[in-house]
Length: 342
Image (cartoon, rainbow, N blue to C red; front, side):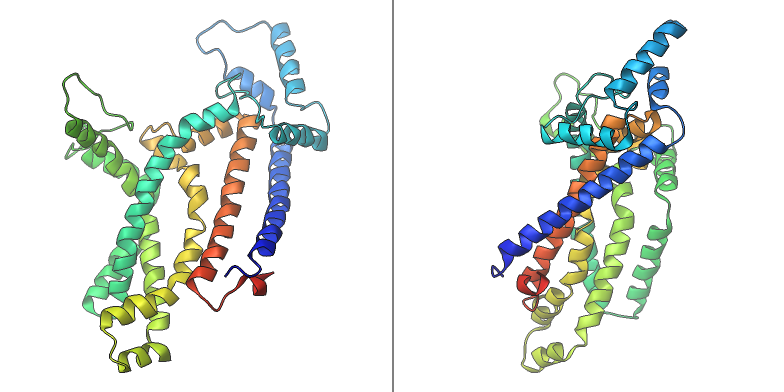
């Protein structure tokens, strides 16, 4: 595995850097070329409940913000100035969402909430989907397998927004069976509450958002696991292992499952960006102050510094996920080596 690893890693990092620069420049260009003036959008979203500034003051502020964001300069120059700030460790300041606040502080404030939600969702997805996919694969075309298939396709077809709203209407305050909180991720803590009570109330806030984040991925991963297992379970080496007297559990988990890992590793590559990117719909419906809500606010106000930081963050995580998947391929399958991939 180690042979050629250093050269392969260097090649992938350089290729990833070039890819990231292309993605960021394209994102910056699209924001600059989009209709409308982002500085005017920023000014309109500012100072709610206060008297509007005079036209002259508004023009001066707009011009000042345009100069600060390099919107009065050519597109390539503006991107270069933003990139030079990133190299120095300065992601800039928010122009609209929380004007004047460092973009990095805004991201670090929202990131832990999204990480907790998505870590729970990913753990739930993998801990349930892989065993269920294996169970379905070793009993193909049985009534149990057909029932599981029907339920999974039904779950996969449900829109996330519709599911979240229906769950709120049925199981949240004011609904048919009001078991879960309607909004937020943090419970009201009263004096004298025990630790277990606080944990229980906190868990109630997480159950519905985590379910909405995981059910589609759970359905998809289960079907991919089943398909991967069915592809290898009838191979010659599986029949040979059975003929040698290996137990069924050893055949399934040691021989078949390891060779079916490639599909699951490929799906795992897309988890890093979703882990930190959050879900705009789920966080919006349940009023969760995470990265998804931050992204929606940045998009609606065209906060260029914040949007560029979010694009960069997502691009880095996507490329890291692909690199991690390539490394896991070599670990899972000895036939794959780094020298052949250079």
